[in-house]
Length: 335
Image 1 (cartoon, rainbow, N blue to C red):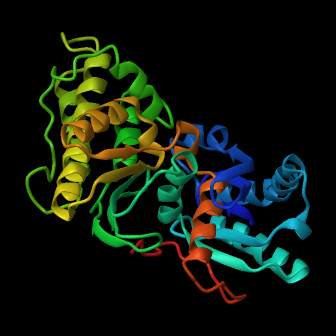
Image 2: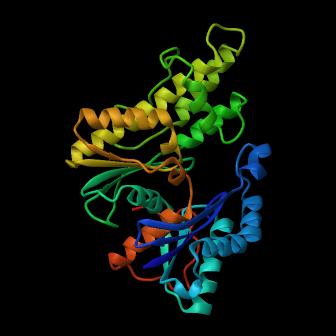
Image 3: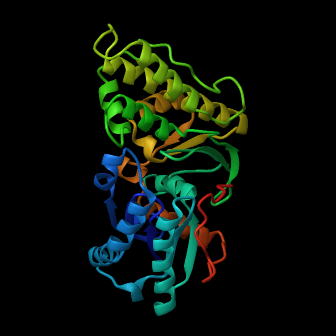
């Protein structure tokens, strides 16, 4: 079964062709980072206009690389939400147009579920039940999955997501946008114990998250200890801040796995590309005899292959196809 995946929820325009949910035939991703860098974050209007200008050429490129055309596609999988409404509508409109002109069924996919299914592309040995952490610029969510396409929402962030906290602190440090990769790089040269940043929600509030207090703590620290005027340096700040975020993510995820009595964990989303998170989660999983599945870094960030994979498994699970009345849902619930 060939699934055409379409992803346009934020600032990546992506189209992919995936066979049977696991084999990537093509996966084209066009990032808009250069368009948004000078603003320090994603500008919705700019994002949607960029999607509009690029989605059709990218669609054609994905089909060309896959050496097929729309007549060979068995189903379309498109992100319905969550995300930016204007951006989502571009992908949904393209999917509806293909359905109308080629009579190809269309599956609506939740963006967070798609991130989870990125792991199934790289790790076909994944078994259930499992706990899945989705951690990105806009989301930090924990799920329990007893089987394919069945989700129990265990916890979420009440304010800043982990990736958002990285970007906001990085902006204060003058690291540009997106700041996560640069913090990861600088942290490797710093002391993670140099600054005692708080670990918010670590011992309370179940499996929910909050990173705004940690971000504020970093802001206050920098006001009291200007860079270059104190013994602590940029690398130490990055390492200490990153360690605080990772400590919370790892402990909550491991605690959820123990409580739900699972044997494995999926970690996905853009922040899952962070080398320190991957390292610390690996050590914690080994300590508790848990299998750990993390997609390759290129599949951690937004892409259409993960959307196609999620769509394939939804079809296998008997999900209904979407109709022409499907609309973008900016705050689509992940449960």
